[in-house]
Length: 309
Ligand SMILES: COc1nc2nc(N)nc(N)c2nc1C
Image (cartoon, rainbow, N blue to C red; front, side):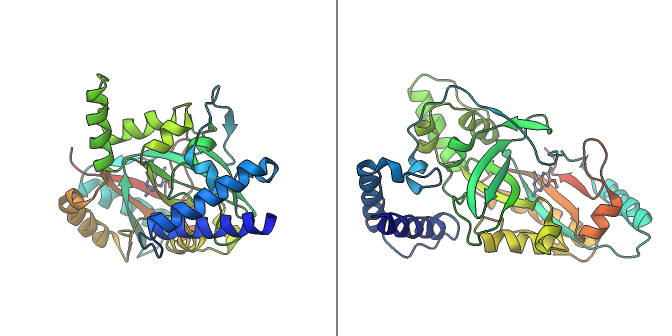
């Protein structure tokens, strides 16, 4: 039975990955449900076989007392903001001056308007999901994070790693939820970020599972431990591990390409089914990031290039 349970878990998580991360399922929903029903049945018959990272934990059902506080392994920083091209050129000048470099590559990533999240995995298994909190410590929202289908419970490589990203509520889910709240005489959420934050703070995990939260992961903690030399390599590494990584990130040869990217997405953002409030611009090479360092609240090697409100 243990073999069957283990095989079922691998198979279910694989199909979950294909559907929610690759958006490219290879079995029907009915076949998927059949596998899941079989696993739920076996875990009911043999409760001692249940593991915290079993796909059955994704459907929720626990009502928590509260959230434990958890200390971040390294502080979760925020970002300085810029709102216009002149300021982003100034950022580039500062970076080049400090680095004494004539040209610096950047990675431009859409800034998703969601909730920051830190995810820890031990030997490829999900062990913790924590909110940013005050940057030094956050809330352990692991049970709720497990219900976010695009967040893997098992990585495709059995590494011990912490990653960070954004949990967000897709726009069409936000609209559906507000319609539902209106019918129930509840006040609507002001925007998808509040809806995602409010959902993650729910103590009833089944309620979280009933709402379609999604994720984009963009950061590897201690990337040097995995032989990664640049942010661009880190994004590829995250994809290889099985995370959902935003497909629109761009490796920019210089700051002009960053500005072109920002102009392009200022117009194109309405095509997206999630809210973005700007572009995060990051110096690509990690050795340069280490030279630039960070202030008490934000890295000097990254900046949020916001869209006009
Ligand atoms: C390096 O620190 C960060 N990187 C980020 N990257 C993206 N794409 N979006 C964010 N919201 C973000 N936020 C922070 C603090």
